[in-house]
Length: 370
Ligand code: BMA
Image (cartoon, rainbow, N blue to C red; front, side, top):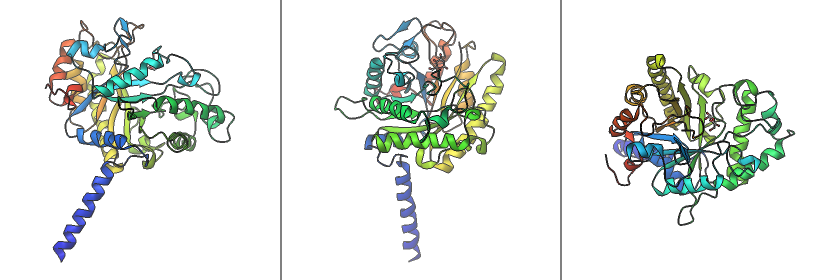
C-alpha cells in the first residue's frame, strides 16, 4: 500500500513536471509554440545557444543580400538564434528603425525557421505621447497615457494591431505560424527608454505588460509567441530583478541585457556576469521559466580573445538558453558585436564555435557538424 501511494505520488509529480515543462504563459499557445518552449528547456542540458541581432539583415559593408551573415562568413554556420526588431512598424514605415525593410524581415524569419534557427523579436517603439524615439524620456506620463483610460490608449491599441498582424505573417512552407520569442519593453529597470524605471510606476509597468500580453493573446488571438522579460543588467538581487515582474502567467523567459565597455573591465565582466547569471538561474528555477542572456556584447570587439577569454568563462557554468550579441551595423563602422572576416577576434570566435557547449544552427539537429 505504502509503495502504491509512493508510486502514485512520484507519478503525479512527474506528470506535473511534464505539464509544467511545456506550460506556456499563453494558455492557448499553438502546439508549435509549446514545442519551442520544450525545446528551449531540453537544450538547457545540451549547451548555450549563440545569438546575433539582425544576423541576416546586414553586416560589415553589406546589407540585405539573401542568406548573407557575418557569423556564417567567419565560421560557416549560422547562429542558433537570430534577433529582429519591430521599431517603426507602429508608424507604418516600410523599414524598421535600423532601415531593414519589414518585407525583408518576414523573409528572414522564414529563412531562419527553415534552417532550424530560433527568432527573438524586440521592439524599440517610438514614444506614443511625444512622437519622439524610444529613447525620448522627456515625459514620465507616457506609460500612463497608453493604459486603458489614457489619452493615447486607442493609438496604442492600433500599434498593437499592427504588431499582431506582422507577427502572424510569419508562416512556414505549410502555412503554419512560426513561433517566435517576443521581448518587448526590454531594459525596463534602466531609465533610458520611455518605459524605464524612473519613467513609470511599478504598477504602471506591470499594467502595461499585462495589457499588451492580454491584447495580443486574447483580443487579437496571437498564439505563436513566447514572452521574454528582459531587465537591464544593473540589478543587484532577486528583489530588484523582480520588482516589476508581471507574474508567472505573463512570462516564459527571464533574461537581462549586459554590455562590456572597456578592455580593462574583463575580469569585472566575467565576475559580474557569473553573479547575475547565478541569480537569474535561481529565479528562473523558482518560477519555472527559461533563463537567457538576452543581450550581451563588447562594441567593436577590441579584445581578440573576447569569445573564449571573457564571454565563455562568464556563461559556461550556467544553464542558460542562449546569449545574443547585438547587431553589426552596416552604416556605423564601429558599431558591431560579432566578428567578420579579418576582424581581430575572428580566430577566437572559431575556437568558441568549436567548443562542444556552444550551440549554433548545425547543433540544433540539422546537419550536426560538431
Ligand atoms: C541600439 C543601437 C541603435 C539601434 C537600436 C535598435 O543599441 O544599435 O543603433 O537603433 O539598438 O536596434
